[in-house]
Length: 468
Image 1 (cartoon, one colour):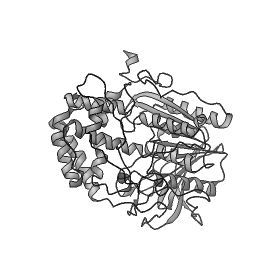
Image 2 (cartoon, one colour):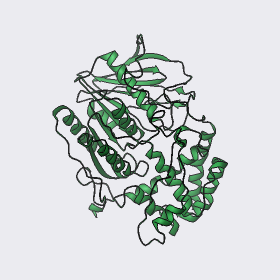
Image 3 (cartoon, rainbow, N blue to C red):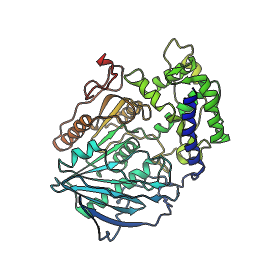
């Protein structure tokens, strides 16, 4: 228990420091006030050299005519990091700054004319911006096949999928201005980048020809709602409430004291801890492979959101809610679902922030797809749970766009735990869908998930029930 608490305290120390250094509520969407000086600069690098090239005369328009701004910009000053990187053999790297963000572009010598745009995930709440290359499994697949790729940092950190969608669209437009119009443009995003993908396909029709979301928060603001549920359910089963109005330190003391004592450790729970785990299991998709491994991995980290803004000062926090969430629990654990639903603390959203007109990235995504979308999701992902896919499927069905969605479950523990084989198959199938009209196979995630994922998991992970 002591080791558990020390680890938790270390996490909390970082989060509290970040929270004390963060800004207040976001200004309205479409009103960016980031204080970095806007600039566009470019550098081209081969495997041996990096030489400055003439910057683009004019920065590309952030959103072309007809495309709305989606970001809820805070106005917090961010510091640009170093965008430089080395190209893979047979390719050229381009990197620099674009308005208030940084970009990377890699073009193979034998470019096939297609472009992959990469949308990275959540980068924390710090002030320094970083630009990520696509994961090695994807990058080492697409460059030899002749695909160019482009990626942007987001001009702000935090949970900011609208900002990410705007900046990702900007680097797409920059690529077109600098290197020419691709024959096909694919959007690929992971984690919060999956939220970027869902928003982009909904609000930027025609910008992308197809998309791949891996471990994606495709449901939008429902991802934050889930983390709110995590914190308040833990407090409920501990017989207390979180003193959110008293700040991060008070919440920390409650979590490391009353809550920790009542629930035990995630791999050695008390009765109350078992009740908490069961409720989370049912909330996130029900019994399925690797739930327990993912639960243990994310147990501490999932309290990070509530600690980052207990006073509900940011737009993301003000838009979050569990007011209408219906909780369930497996039988035989000494408490009913009715008792949970009647007793758990209910956090309501501020309608001034949870509204699509002013804050399009602070509401659940609508599922109004404009291009084919293939998703991969791990059964043991408890940071962005597979229930995101279940809820998103319902939204897509309501929008009448099920012909544009294929979902796959991967039997794996942890967040974004995919093999090179799984990434390769998914991207290959996506491009065949876009270019040849061959709809790929997928999984039905709407029912029992206890045996899901056998079709597309490659290889089976150690500890998989099918290996026993």
